[in-house]
Length: 446
Image (cartoon, rainbow, N blue to C red):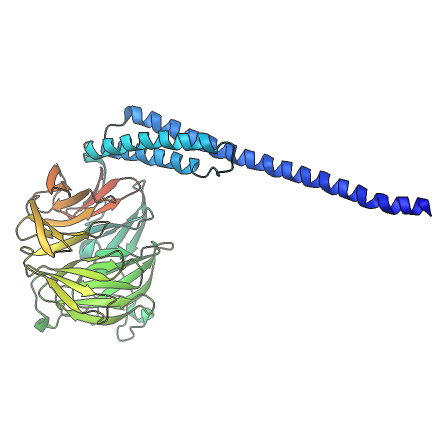
């Protein structure tokens, strides 16, 4: 009886001892994993800091100092992941303070460094680009009008990825009133903000049933042919949708929420509103003579449309109580053509093709607060990702100009091939692509 009792009493003791040993082993393993994880973080942070310091020794240009600053930011981000209970926390905090001081220096250097445009590549071929637009994901679409009847697609290594024909069988896309193959004339493009789709406008259509094409000087009473918008999948680079719009569609813009695509129709003096879910036009808004450039704010609440046959810019309400109601920014300047909004949404910039100026508009006061002349016939422009610079193509001067936005000062103008007309910006590589109507794409490091 005593032997059984001793055995019964012994079992829990053995079990408890085993449990305690197992728990201690697990805790040690967890501690080891935590130490190893923190060690990796510290090593990664130190590596980024070392790289930033090395890059800082040779940095001279604004772009180079931007890279230095970004690398210090990455080192700080890594250090901030060290938990407060860690034995490394105090040393990590000291490093954060140290790295932050270096980051501040790099940012100051970036602010005051010269930013110059340097030609790095010229692309030629069977092209006549009216525009070039970056997808945001490393693809560049050049729209080659009726002179080539193509869209040429390039990657960041300047390789031609695909030549997309503008030929289309309209009946395959639900437009059974048209039979046979038709051609378009790609003029402008915009991308969904996830980069999945490109929306390409066609100046006019060619083929049976299209007998009255629009032209540069026109009026809605002319009853010109309507045209079409292509939706192209950027994975397959195939046309998936063909959507009817107005006559001589020019600029296209996609709302940041990917809900709407806006198309300015030159000869019908109006704006097409396309719903991206139904792939149909849901509204047509009359605006006036020759609507052209479009810019949409970051909240997808307002769209700004340049009316090139006037001195005004239309402001379209996209989400308000009265959807698609129109207000106006008046007397901005002669023939506003292209529009950009700064990243913070405080200023709107307009190229004034009729007077050779770029206007800066304060959106809080709706007043022009600055103008600068960049060249003869400024056409398209693009704003850098930090909002510090505009890059403007001057069609008749055969130049591209860099404008500092804070004081509207031209910092540099560089010669291009004949008739630069389109421009886009790659925030990853800090390169500007310029479309020259004479038959080339020119890439500048900025």
